[in-house]
Image (tube, rainbow, N blue to C red; front, side, top):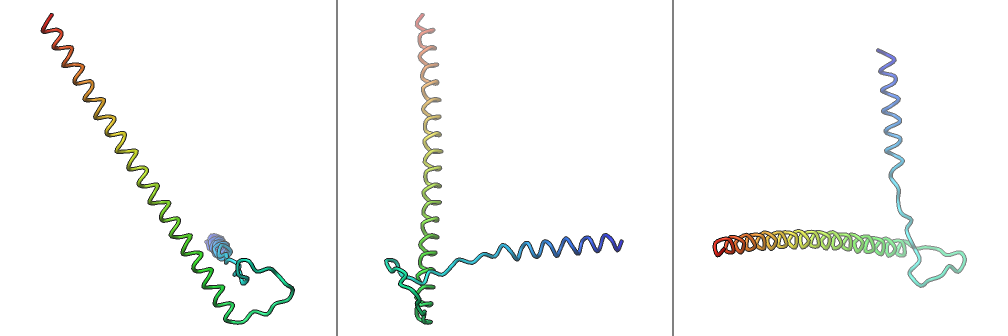
Length: 109
């Protein structure tokens, strides 16, 4: 019993450390686009704030782009389904008309 408890405790600890490792953070890009590294630079709190705002805006833009992609994908899928349904209806209509023509031929013959 104690062995099982010890084993479970070890598994829980390894699982918790594994979960802790998954928290990756992105590097904050302090340089604006178009700026080049010119040696040692000192960053003010204002520049950190601006960089974090740029990063937040960039993430927001990426999120909006992903949502638009998902919406386009959903629209494309619904259009494909509608097109398939219309083709099926046309096929059924053609078959029905063909059967009616065959019955008409049999009546005339």
